[in-house]
Amino acid sequence: MPEMGCDASVLINGSTTERSAGPNASLRGFEVIDAAKAAVEAACPSTVSCADILAFAARDGIKLTGNVDYQVPAGRRDGNVSIAQDALDNLPPPTATAKELTDKFANKSLTLEDMVVLSGAHTVGRSFCSSFLDRIWNNTTAIVDTGLSPGYAALLRALCPSNANASTPITTAIDVSTPATLDNNYYKLLPLDLGLFFSDNQLRVNATMNALVTRFAANETEWKQRFADAMVKMGNIEVLTGGAGQIRLNCNVVNPSSSSSSPVVQLAGEEEAAAAGAVAAS
Image (cartoon, rainbow, N blue to C red):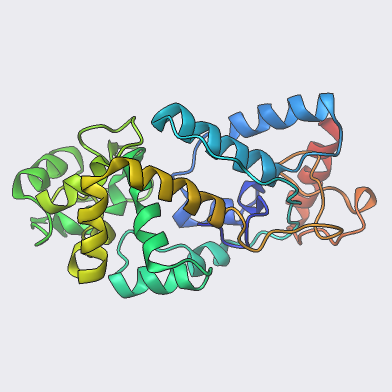
């Protein structure tokens, strides 16, 4: 879920930007966006934003993994502000309760149903141990979260040592059955106590959410359609258009002030110098 809005602020490099924040530590694939941006800039300079490229990449990823087609509105512009604290304030952590999940999504004008639908994205991808460690270890003592299968917890403990932290490179698939396929298997796993995150299991403790879980587990076609709709809705959160923001020349840094009438994100001295150099080289 976007922090500042869908303005590609998460792509900006720096020690105090959203990209460096803990909730975004698992993000990968920046080089794919960089390659796409370079190709677009070569063909059509200063026209297509990094924010639009991100939205197109998400659409293409969903097509490749789930065979779902949908149209992506274009015309976003890029933000020139990126603050790590915004990621902490806006992104629901894997430890979030049902109320915290609904509140975080409501703050971005997304409904409870949108939240449950978008949670289905956990059917693909991987997670670091630190995101679920508290469900399987209490310091060095083995525990089993009440919403986690004992067998699954044992497998996770064999994978993740009790002293794992955010720097531990070990990862595991979020969906233990079809980790590379965008399908409705996520919803089928939850009643079996095979949801990896505490927040996943929270979809079962609320009657309204649990009813949606049951519905989507029974009807993959409906879930995929609603997922596509929710992705478009999420992609329209707090977008910048018209003269707001900028079209970044390099997705990793804001343009130098001479390249845009918009104010540049405040970076530390060495980061500002590196940003200018990166744009000059792009």
